[in-house]
Length: 255
Image (cartoon, rainbow, N blue to C red; front, side, top):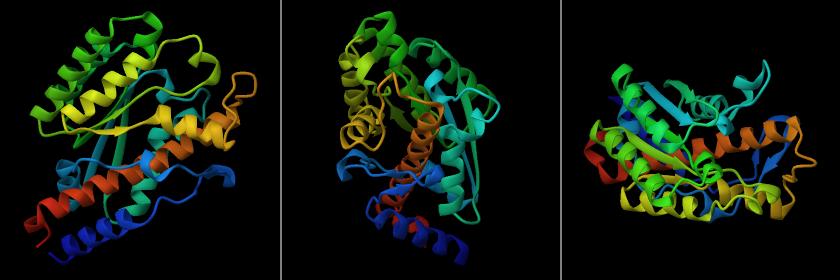
């Protein structure tokens, strides 16, 4: 019982801290506007899992959830997220598994979610989507319907959901009409009480601040790794906030 109380207090304390200029790999700072990374909705299933000292998270995504090379899996944001959460939740075994395939649309990812739920049941799923559908010019409403079905399937199994939209790139921004798909993701997150990690807005903010130069000509492997490190840490922040919010809305669980 004491262990549960201490972890609940830890969640609340971490979530109450202001969003910092987080240190990433190699000393790069990750400043971000305060309103860009906020847990709007509680994550009660993730919190219950953490209280039971085992937090399983699945990342469903496309190629932008991965990094190339032998060291890629360890430096991509899912592994960075796992490390950041383990540091913030001492005593909790954190496992982040990745179901990411290049060039997979939302409707294809939806089928992966069904398979995921049949194979194992994580407490939280981070669903990164939108880019492939935008490139293929899939009807935005069809895209939204696929995402909504996937979110409904997850929530029906008591799985918390974080929706993540596409990356920002100054070059592709002018070539690919991503707006309608980003709008669908934002709308569906609000409509279904799922938290949104607005990667598009966060990376655009970084580019405008000069934190990272995201132009195609200068986007190096090192920059990609720094971006993933920052995303992993900010995702951890969002998740801890969501779990802390759940503790406030369900106080008997902390007793």
